[in-house]
Length: 147
Image (cartoon, helix red, strand yellow):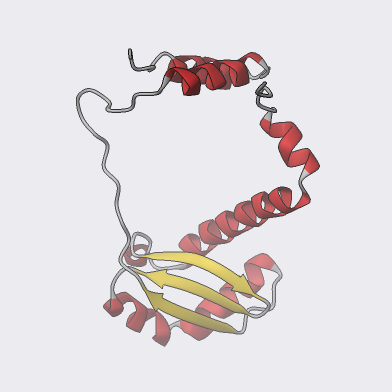
């Protein structure tokens, strides 16, 4: 017999590693927001904070020209990040990686689920108290393909 799915809140509560990853993700997202406020506006769409290791901030740029320009401003960026976050940022590590932009599919959405997947999603939705999430999961379960 298959066991019904556990609510996500229970999984996160019982798994310290998942909770730590979730918290790290939130921290990096907040630092990325602070970085975007520090950077000149022309860099916002081309740079993204990727990691923070003790005293080094890793920033990804989508073009080498932006990475080169940031290198010239690294001292000011480190100082501003240190002042706004209370961290001891001493060095910027810049990496060039083109960003992959996702586009929304227009027209009919191509997602179809098997009956088993739809049933699992419905079971998960039945154990959730959050109304918006419950509604979204139920709508997702309705995309079951007709075999």
